[in-house]
Length: 113
Length: 115
Image 1 (cartoon, rainbow over the protein chains, first blue to last red):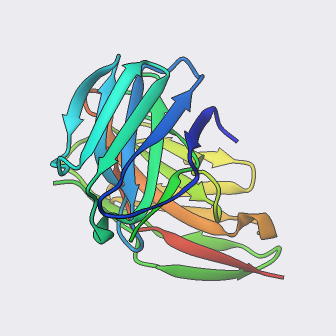
Image 2 (image 1 turned 120 degrees about the horizontal axis):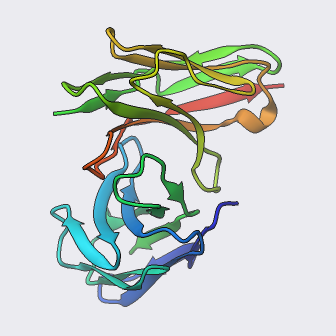
């Protein structure tokens, strides 16, 4: 297991619910990322934070709202999601945004009903 | 725009045999990293091997090695002496060295290891 953890590991929510995904890293990294992984598609970068400042919002719908209160924690707040948002959401971190290597978390399997 | 293509959605290999996973990419950059990541079922993605484009020598990590052909923009992964624990999705990825955080991933190859 790497030093990036995610909770919950599985989440089922209705379209009117509000929930949050949590990511935590204890690697001393300065950059954190949210990715969406859908079957048979490349990983999609959603958000990038560097030193707690958002540096990328990759055309993600506003029903996804990230939060980075400190360099060790990253949240993804979810509200009024659609069934097509069902996917595996991966958190990752790296020393800097320019670092080549990413450490990934185990992901949260999200199902929107 | 940069792209990464993995043309083999699924591969199978007998235990103890050797298998090669293909990856091609397209970029106009000269300095970049290439990676192979492994994602076992229900487990987190981990780095298998990394190649720096300015290094001509192919990267090797125990039973894993790459065949990096920069001119052909090809980056294949060879797994020798395959083990049951090698069964996973394998993703090829590219990132420009420095100044960008935009990894480009391929769609993955599912590797099955047959006992």
